[in-house]
Picture (cartoon, helix red, strand yellow):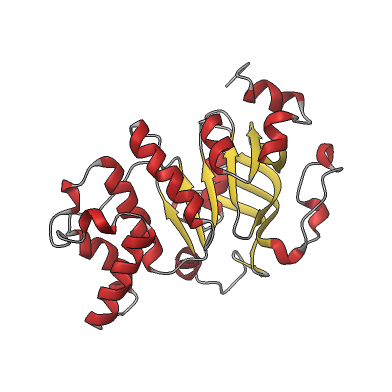
Length: 271
């Protein structure tokens, strides 16, 4: 495990670093290049076990790039180069011989726009299990139900599992996508603005779900909403122009940030 003293910028060196046992993932000196230009530059940041970490910052600051780097989604973008380390439970996910498909199973992703498959509700959740080779109907039934329950949507869909997922409301579709991610039993869940396209009621359901899920999962969420970050996260990282400006406990970040740029962004002076 990398030294935790490199987890935060030097400007926040008075912040007490977490114990290695508390860290589920650790990015160290992480840079991502699209062509010759760095999208994020030498970012070191811990992701703590069974906590919600919010990534905030203006558009184009690198927070979504950082998020996708945690489960090697950027591998799918041509011309991308990654320097530095991303460690998951002591293993560098970018080390030679590491299977990116297995990384993405352990570190699941929920996207900004709900993207259910044009299949039944049941088959949406069962999809990843079938790809992994599960054929036992009883096992599939149990895991589909468990995942839908954990995503707080079972009671709404249990009587219509064979109907198209596309007939669900936007908020229901997003919770279905969360159930689909949960079905393959990830350890970490990445969420890229999961409520940005939803109405306030559906957003509140997603936020409530995030608070429930952190009891069993480690969660990293990108959000443009300062209010949402304050409501759902335990820790917050502020990105600006591809760099990590400040990281710390959310309550402290929103009440007494150490960096002027953090305060200016949180109070709406820019971004």
